[in-house]
Picture (cartoon, rainbow, N blue to C red):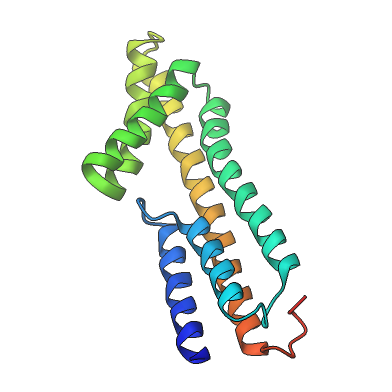
Length: 169
C-alpha cells in the first residue's frame, strides 16, 4: 500500500509541476496539498511538520512573487495604472478563450491596448509597456516553475531517503 500512496504522490507532484507552466492547474498549491496528503496518509514518516510549514510558506511566497513580477515588469517599462490593469484583464481574458497562448498574448495586448486607449500613449510607448508586462509575467512564471521543480526534487529525495532519511525533520 505504501508504494501505491508514494506512486500517487509522485503523479500528483508531476501534475502540479505541469501546472506551474499550464494555466488552469493550481501548480504549487496542488504540490503542497499532495505533500500534506501524503504525509497524513503515511503518518509523516518521510518528512515532518517543519517541512510542510516551510514548503507552504515557500508556495505562498512564490505566488506573491509571480504576481509582483508581472506588475514590476510593466511598471519598470513605464506602464501606467491603466496598463497594469489592462495586462491583468488581458491575461485573464486570453486564458479563458485561448488557454496558454492567450494568457501570454493577452498579457501583452491588454497592457498595449490599455496604454493606448486609457492613457492615450503613442504606439511606441504602449509597445514598451506591453513588453514590460510580458517580460515580468514570463519572469514570474519561470520563478514559479523553478520553485515547483525544487519542491518536486526535494520530495523525491524525501521519498527515496525513507523513514530513516536525514530530510525527515
